[in-house]
Length: 124
Image 1: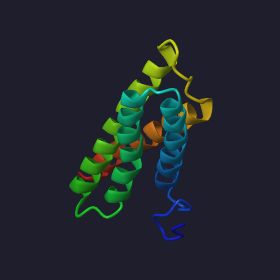
Image 2 (image 1 turned 45 degrees about the horizontal axis):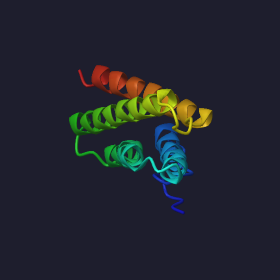
Image 3 (image 1 turned 60 degrees about the horizontal axis):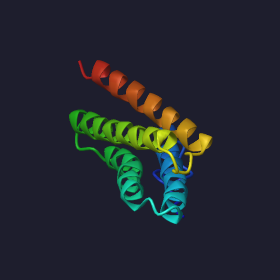
C-alpha cells in the first residue's frame, strides 16, 4: 500500500476517511452483487469510490479555485453515495448497508463541507 502523504495511512483526515469509505463501499457492493442487485451495485461503486479519487486529485490542485472545485465534486459524489445507500436501506430484499459505512460517509461529508467553506472564506 502507498505510504506517501496521499496514501491510506495519510495524516490528512479527509484523504484517509475517503479511502476507508471506498474500501467499505467495495465490501458492500460485493454483498449487493451476491444478492444479484447489479445495477445499484454498479452505481454505488462508481460514486462511492469517486469521492476518494476526487479528494486525492484535490491534493494536487493547480489553484485554490481548482482545489475547491474538486472538493465540491467529491461532496456531490458523497451525496449520490448517500442516496444509493438510503435506497438500499429502504428497498425490500436489499442487504442493509452496514452502519460503519454510513458513519464513515457522514464523516467524509462533514469534513468536505468544512473544507469547502473554509477554503472559500480564506480565498478573499
